[in-house]
Amino acid sequence: MPDTVLVAILSLMGTLAGSFGGSQIIKYRIEQLEKKVEKHNNVMERTFILEEKIKVANHRIEDLEKEK
Image (cartoon, rainbow, N blue to C red; front, side, top):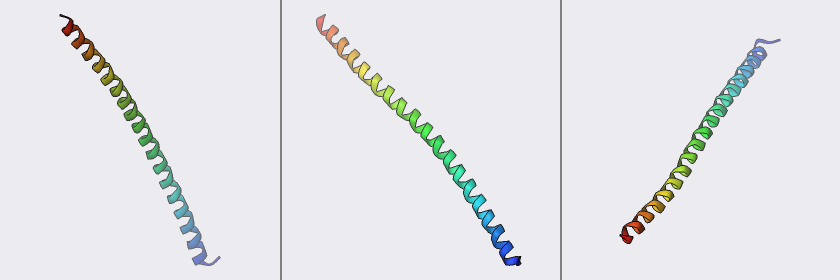
C-alpha cells in the first residue's frame, strides 16, 4: 500500500473522530442550554402568577380601606 494512501486513510479517520467528538460536545451543550431555558421559563411563569396574586391582594386591600 503506497504511503499516500495510508496517510489519506489516517487523515480520514482523524477527521471523522474529530467531527464525531465535536458533534457530541455540541449536543451536550445544547442539552444544557435547554435545561437552563426550561428553568428560566418556569421562573417566568411563577413570577407572572405571583404578580397576578399581588394585584388581587392589593385590590382587596383597597376595597377594605374604602369600607372604613
